[in-house]
Image (cartoon, rainbow, N blue to C red; front, side, top):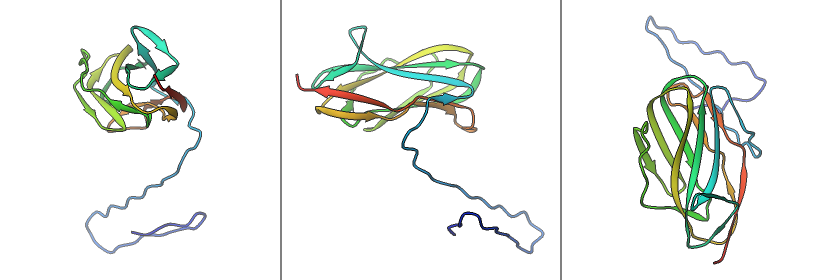
Length: 164
């Protein structure tokens, strides 16, 4: 493992008659992610009793509604839905018709779709607001699992949880 320096030229050589594979990656922290995408559009909002909620109350359960607009049919799609730090995943959820699998973690929920046609879809992630405070809701993202260059991403949001 080698850390590459910017603006420097590197050359890789290896004497063999077999194929040689070289890979590299970069990491960066984006403090102000923008809402963007090229095959999908995604938006989230909190819902309680069928109504959009701007401020959550500690101890109550909500649905984090994830609206996905698919511009072209796609296969092997993953929707990543981050949870704000003051919320915990709730136990019960309803599997949507085109949903293949769902994984719930403490900080996010991943929804997997084997195939999705062009159109609009809504998925619900049940959460429980647990701790009062002002939290960051990281961007939800939808992308092809094996070619993540086709994606849609929401912008950064703030969410407030108040005491009951």
